[in-house]
Length: 239
Figure: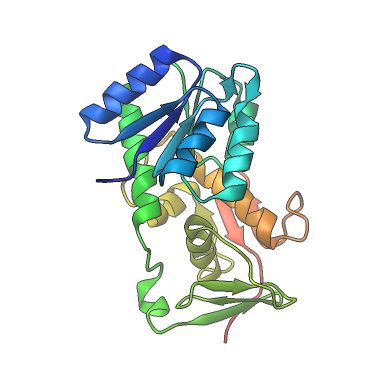
């Protein structure tokens, strides 16, 4: 049996709606009304994905998202009534993989759940012809081994990247100086499993920057090209 999806929401009606819709599509589902109950589920069993409300009564869903991301690599989809785009950006930067605002269509939730799960489950061979032989790259003191899927910082320490972060970095490093649109990156990372409203690539870029940029607020490696997408500005060499 597949690992369950954990629904974390303080509204029983929302939990019931999500549970019914996901179970109708064959998913196994467990529920939590707060952070304590959520942690109990994590302690009891592996969890395949979390849908998380931004506000949980007196608790802060953003704090729970931060704690979850710090401890584990479980996919997180924020589902909330908040409509402020700033909340959306903050949620993504804290580690959420996607964001859906209430009220939502159950069909959209199911599609996004499947897309995020597929992205995590695929053991991507990004740039297959190059990575198959174990290509190593160097950039600004960093080294990247695409066969071992390892990245080392200039001081020699390992950089702990998630699957999504590593795949994104591999795409960028293999195309230095080339501006890649958000649509191109989404196509290469997720295939056809995304929609025009899916902005998870921005959150993924933000998390990668925090790990490889000396000052993520002033990125020097992964730069934004306003209105287009992103470009890798580092000096890349094959080792």
